[in-house]
Length: 116
View (cartoon, rainbow, N blue to C red):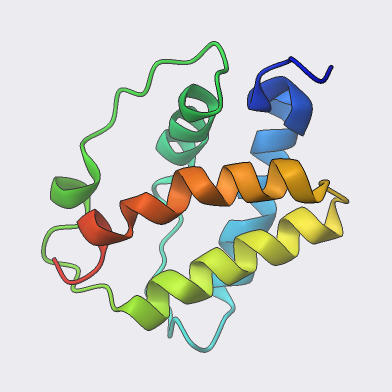
């Protein structure tokens, strides 16, 4: 398992889906986000994480800059969603190595998401 892709070390599609399905409602309920997250991106987010972690998916969504254009997402909002993801991963007992790798895949997207 040490050499398995992050996708498999996280638990595969069921685990990614569970993490997204827990993070979206937590973020929707987060007062720091004031209802800014619709959850309409759920399927594309799962697909994107699957592909990014070495799973069998191909991401078919838009690039992050055009997908978030006009939303004017702040650094604080991006941070709040990231925090909710980390709390979800902690709740599911994801080991530090895998959690850090996943966050390391998401964090670089910040520049294409914030402020557009």
